[in-house]
Amino acid sequence: MTQKQIEIAKLEAKIAIVRRELTTVWERQGRTDAQVLAVAAKMDELCNEYHKLTGTKTRSLSRLQRKSIKATLPTTD
Image (tube, one colour):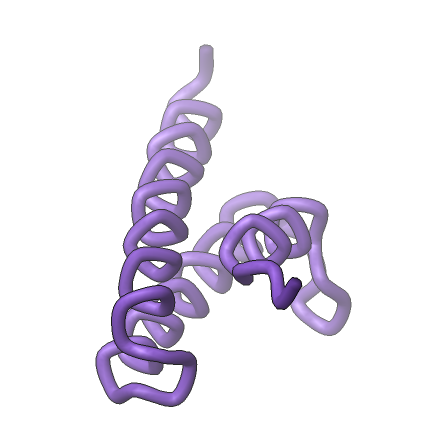
């Protein structure tokens, strides 16, 4: 594994942790709570860093971002 691949893997792990944190806070606090917005901002920063490392464009959502968003949002059944 190259150094870049290791960095990407570490970043993906961080994104997964923040995604779980965001889900927990969302369910506990509600979607417009300041803590939820702070964790969402952290997720944005990690996704931007991911884009820089992978060379993907930030104008469209990457597969990782779509997956993160979908996994984060609770169902509204």
